[in-house]
Length: 205
Image 1: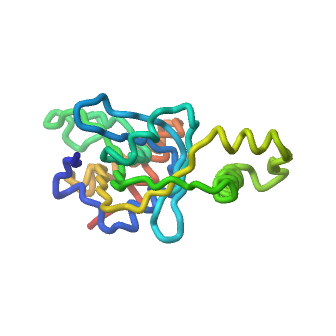
Image 2: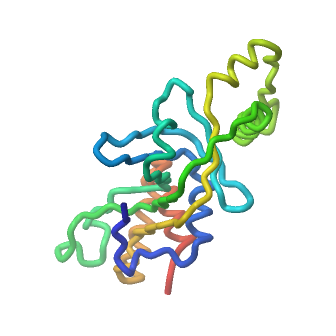
């Protein structure tokens, strides 16, 4: 599997891809095994300090059983938006497009076998997404907690390589890009406003 990335849309550094993963951790995890339908799961994956990923899924999900025999890639998507030709300086010369940013992390997942590691991962995951004010705290203990931990499979992915694509009108003039940002910001739609912010963060000369 490989990602088509024209030269203009290559991320400036791996740090850009890691920032995308950190800010948009809900991933599509795909494992392909020769001669079989690919396994696809949607789940949050935590970016660890060493650049690896950690996550968990239901033990009843057969996906994890394919980890050892297949090729796995985690796909992360940042903000995205439809771009109308009306927004460019010369709209009659343009066609519609779609701006987006993605990161593909390739690697072989390794299972976390001990219950303590799995529980720590679950606690870290909830802590990351709970609000700072009055966050939920785990109260389940004993046999019920053991049953919960036994019902999930936790895993760790050390990336073999990361592909990323930041398609944000880099092939257009500075004036065109500026007008697109203005239109996105004025849309009132959170996803389009996020795309405008992303374009400004990654603006190139």
